[in-house]
Every structure is written in C-alpha cells, then in structure tokens.
Length: 124
Image 1 (cartoon, rainbow, N blue to C red):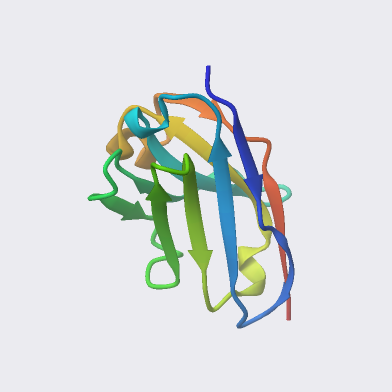
Image 2: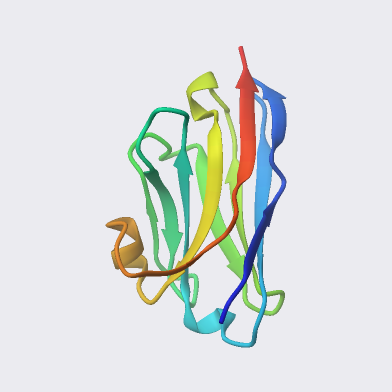
C-alpha cells in the first residue's frame, strides 16, 4: 500500500510559480512511475506530467510543455512538479498518481494510487 500526500498548492498571480510536492509512504516508491493530473470544476481530469522510476523519462501534456517540470527524489520518496509562468487556466486541483509505467500514466491507465489533491488557483 502506498499513500500519497500532495502539498504546495495555493493562490498565485498569473506569471508566478509554484512547486508542488507529493510525498509517498512505504518502501516501494522507487518502483513506481509517478505522475500529476489536474481537474478543474466541470472539466474532465487532464494528464499533466509523468516520470519513470529512475527519472530518466518524462512526459508532459501539450498544454503544459515548456512551463511545467516533473522531477523525483527517490531518497526522499517525493515527486515534484515545478510550475512556472502560471496562467488562470492552470487553476485546478492537482493530483499525484503512482503507476507501473510512465507511458501508461500518460494515457491515464493502470494507475495504482492517487493522492487527495492540492488546489492551485491562479488570479489574473
């Protein structure tokens, strides 16, 4: 069993930056690919980013490429999402997810665990 706890969300002005963190419990963190998704009110969940177990492979959603960066620290059981150049349309609840493959996470499938989410609100 893996528990995921997100943090780092908040209210920020457009153009600003945030770093989200997702801390995982358990000893098997390094065996999971990790990802971030987001969901805005009234919209479907959207893939944001995914990273392989080693951190050597990353994927990004088209709407965030060039502005978001996913990294992980297996020694700290934590995955991060650096968000730069925030836009009002980035306003969403951001969820951390764990799966067996970063490729599958990109497709939104085979997700083993979800976090509870952290709210990001971007004001214009």
